[in-house]
Length: 302
Image (tube, rainbow, N blue to C red; front, top):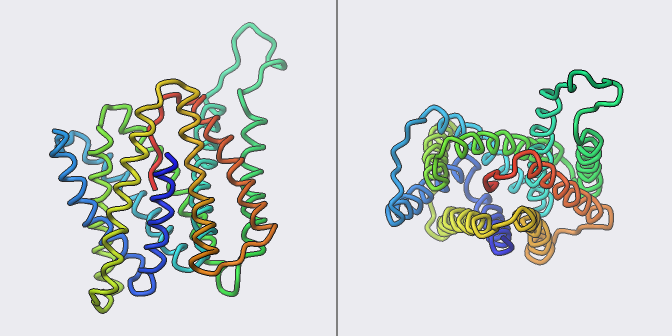
């Protein structure tokens, strides 16, 4: 999982560099194309059929995922790398809110018992988790945002929220027995189609092979990171092991912060670090709440 987090952070570096030469829609398109080839070969080597009986569910998951991916790439292009990565990792807080909030809405008091002594489970913990996450966002954005970055910050927050919606659809596909390789393949296909259509509207950038070389690691690293993450969850045999693996993904924020400072010269002050720490803490709490609500949930995607 730590290797997966490092790979995703490194992919963010490549996206940020490539965004100087290509638009967000183009990056989604090329990432999808490379992913189709990589995952198609992988599925064939593993004997996983790409035929599905649920094309509509895959299409809906891909649509939400593409919106999230495009928003994330836009945020990476216009915000410090550490900021954009951290906003995307807010997805765990959103997932916890959706899952546990849904459980609270569907909760019914036990008949025959005093209703005044019965309350929905985990409601106080959920509220604290979400509040801590958004306090972290405020602390992190307040010192680091420059002029004209407010819109990019909103887009970054949207990337985390839509990633949570996409994850809920991944959970639904997992429950009906769809292999993760097939799910990720159709996401890559959807990315290529949607990114290509969007790029036809916005226009393709001038092609330069030196610049285009940054596109290859974007697609390859995304696939490798997902494989590492899937492997990590597969080898976690106990509930405690699954929680440990899930929480280690937040090391990606640390890697992104190191890249941000060393490679791009971004300055993160004490409030920014405190905000990141709060978001990591709330994300860990959100992951624990999610695992309690849905013990065998699939891996998140980035």
